[in-house]
Amino acid sequence: MRLLHTMLRVGNLDTSIAFYTEVLGMTLLRRKDYPDGQFTLAFVGYGAEDENSVIELTYNWGVDKYELGTGYGHIALEVDDVYKACEDIRSRGGKITREPGPMKHGSSILAFVEDPDGYKIELLSPQRKD
Image 1 (cartoon, rainbow, N blue to C red):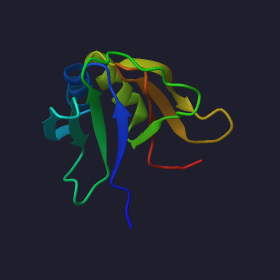
Image 2 (image 1 turned 90 degrees about the vertical axis):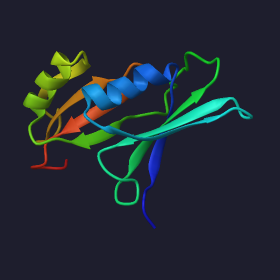
Image 3 (image 1 turned 60 degrees about the vertical axis):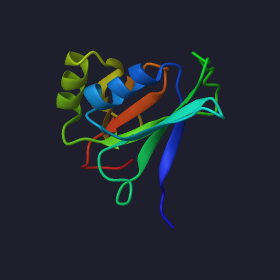
């Protein structure tokens, strides 16, 4: 078995695709409309789906906002340098919600960024996994 993808419902598919590709540097792997179901799926990631886990962005036609609730946590991305990644993300219009630095009760260097729908994305250094 392997993890295939994580699905996020989004309110504006084009804005979300732009965030994940232009701000976080992912690639749009595929996009397909499903007129009978009135939804569109777009898959983004850092590599081919047959070799990597990806994110599925689901746009339900006519729905422009979701309540995230209290169950969702975050998606985590490993980056070479959390400080540099935050600088790059900020320069491309991304919203940093937790500045880079050590984990409160651990030693990992991390930061958080927020996508256009409010989903949190953790940026982690590769050195430690607390």
